Image: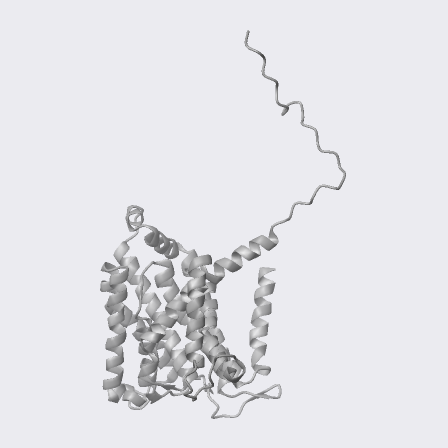
Length: 369
């Protein structure tokens, strides 16, 4: 039954580009890219217990690494090679920072990674020859085996014209499936158990033979590679990268994703990513139909759709921390278990009460002589 449900979900996801317009496909692309990055941050913060506020920095390394490696000015490498090297470049950036992650934890690590965001934003603004400065750079379309994930060439499948969004949809599905299965395999294997033991108690983990510094550093590198992959997919979806997108707000958004979805859960990180990513886009489109929300571009003093979306998922974080600390994934699991629990049938009306058996009957206490 589980395999059947999985195949049904995959079939529905593969059929969506034939029925949805570009807006909904774009929401799906952004959500899949965010889910890839959220899974990486979930491994680091939810499983390994390491607080990171610098996730946006590694997304920027992946996005700008791909743009520079595949574009001009730059080496002009094949786009498929540039995408792989951009992910490895993000992992190398995480490896350079891993000695700090191996020795520092908690709030101190959060402050240290926060410095990466400000440093990276400054480099993106000043390194014009690589990043394009404030205006950013256009993103070269990805090509695999002569097939281009752009709308430059005409492609029709079953009578439906496939543009950039339709083609990138299947690329996003493939990358998300790769992220899903690799992350779940990591969590269910020996590294995942070691990271959970490390999160619960460093002393107990070290007694059981877990190399604390090495596993901390490894978790940071793996999380950085997932972020780099998300950055590449985001760059392909946006088609232009600008420094202002990869700021502190993006890092806070990713923290909100894993808290809302559920720490240490791949499915929870995915659900949180979809919620945080899709909510502002939907509120922007339907702002004229929502109360107390102003349409984009107006300045009448009301709340804009982006600010309203942040208020809503901020309130969602507070509610989840109060009533469901394990997030949407834990809440769904408890509801599913409650629905599967068989209910005891009530006794028939008028039925005589069962008499106690002789073995279980209470014996009268004999008087003491």
